[in-house]
Image (cartoon, rainbow, N blue to C red; front, side, top):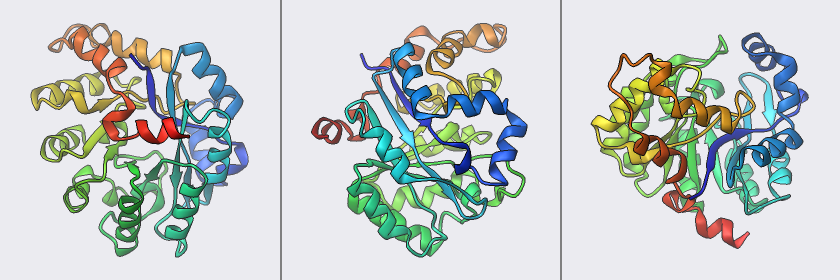
Length: 287
């Protein structure tokens, strides 16, 4: 059964810019993050933790002046294309966003990351809609950072997952992943997964908030959408084994004060979410 990290990052310090980088450093140990964010460190961690496939995500934001290039991610993924699956990122505020997305696909990237509160765009904006149309045409899976942000200038008015209801309905064949289970709006994310067959969510960056994670898992179970939850780490914030251990110990971390999450549900999240669930298997095999 595959062990897949559906949300992982690599970058160099110069990619982060003068605003987003310091905001990240203020939240996490900057020395550790800098050392762990390199492609070499990412690959070492994947090897050590027994990860079969990892989604490696580019990220760009004109609003924050940060840019983890598609080319950088594509070059890393090309070193092991059956294991490393690259996600492009384009900024809807860039008038050349759609051509850049097409270029990224030509580089071998298989999905797209968008971040309305980091890129400062409304999910219903015409510029964003043009990107969705291109992504759907190209057969890309689209991951949204649709949730809270740590950077002060990130507009939360663009962040609620409910704003993706219209997008998921209009592009019903396009697979959508809501990163970080849409925190703190996990209930809204669960309602979207229940309503739309094409909407999924990853659990990345939730393992250090066990109470929130536990309640999100309960909500998904109550709505019978636990099969649409994907494991992810948000590496280099945390590693795959560390996050898997936290998930397996969720009932202990919340001190037994919430209804328990079953081992079956936990192991399903970790080992029963194949790439084919989101239509990726054929593309990866062909790489």
